[in-house]
Image 1 (tube, rainbow, N blue to C red):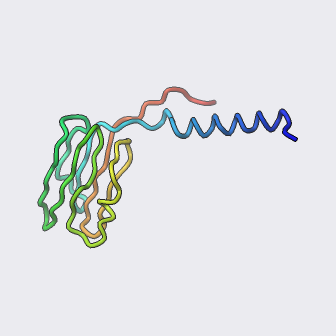
Image 2: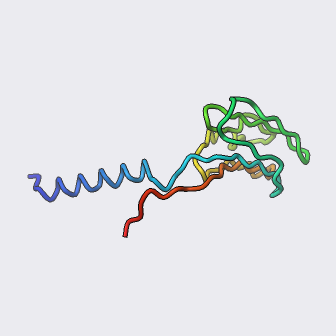
Length: 118
């Protein structure tokens, strides 16, 4: 038998799940930062014309693709290709990392807080 308290609990859990899914603390990033072995080699806006960025740096060659306000690693000289399998990222704080080659692609931007629970 379902009691009123069960419905309230289910509603609260649904609201919490929706809050986490559409969290006001996550924002879409504004800048892509590309680093090789800790050295920043490029920065470009996440928003802009869809295009590929080709890099040859410190013996590593790779290609990034900016598309529809997201970025992905589409080609990398590494054996396991886990960085390519990461897919597209767009949220501030997210990264694509190729450990064998020391390549990091990060999305940065300011996080705006809509409200504070207190």
